[in-house]
Length: 403
Ligand SMILES: *Cc1c(COP(=O)(O)O)cnc(C)c1O
Image (cartoon, rainbow, N blue to C red; front, side, top):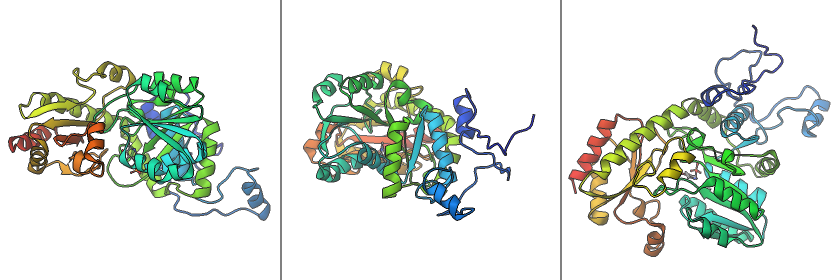
């Protein structure tokens, strides 16, 4: 059998292919050059065969690239691969996770629309809504993530969009995505899910009924802490509006970062599975340590939403947090005594990271706001990487011994 390149065969024409095949091959166009890897198109613009060709491409009458703020072949490959992995009709890449959230709201909401956001979202997501989107007349309320009755009673006639992160950071709370999608649709609203912590390898919100899924590709999709980027995926009707905003406003993804993320996607599932397996072992071990008061990880049978996590996700993710006895002083001692683990607030890397949320990611909140968010002074967050599990345990044991 020959492979028909000239017919523009896509590897994404892999109808029925499984996740691992799509993660390695979806979106790659086999070109006459026959390159094996994904080609990196470092070009801002494209040439046309004639003035008429240019006119037809600008008018959208003929397919083809015009300018890299609109489309770029490397970015397109990344978008098609994400769409295949999330089960989306279309995906569109953005310059960062934050610009993915910005483009969702800018393209789907107008002044006077009401948005419901889960309380425990990423810090900059709250700042985006509070400091900027509210100035343009978007109304915002915050709802405790897991409480479906609270969601039901928060709707107003103008509620247009629900935005959630599940599982949440750093306390690993979940929401029943299928149930929340049902509630959103009863009220004529759309449900958007920030799927950064699970990635499509562990959870596919669109298949559970969500309308839009987004990522900070900076985290697990890249997986090795090299570049910033984001992506939004969903149905064509909504994605066309998001594309329209991005093309005009410009927070689109660099082709170089798209190329990095394509390489990241090839190993996404095995990284997520290995990092989740280590996180579970560490969480079980931490629960046994006398200096540890409480561990937050949905993989633990003691987690109140363990059953939901088991059927909504294929693994529990690689982020866990725990409280030590002795408040901020003890927490800092644990962090400072580690030798292998990096002290940084980043996550999604093959390198394990450790952070003190109360004085970093949540440091600008008032003590009352922090208490409402459940972030105590003794809380430590660990984003588990790919180092040897015994070495990670030994490093944390060293930290705990310092208390
Ligand atoms: C990091 C992060 C973001 C923001 O992504 P950037 O790529 O840093 O802009 C959004 N949501 C979650 C859950 C994140 O962890």
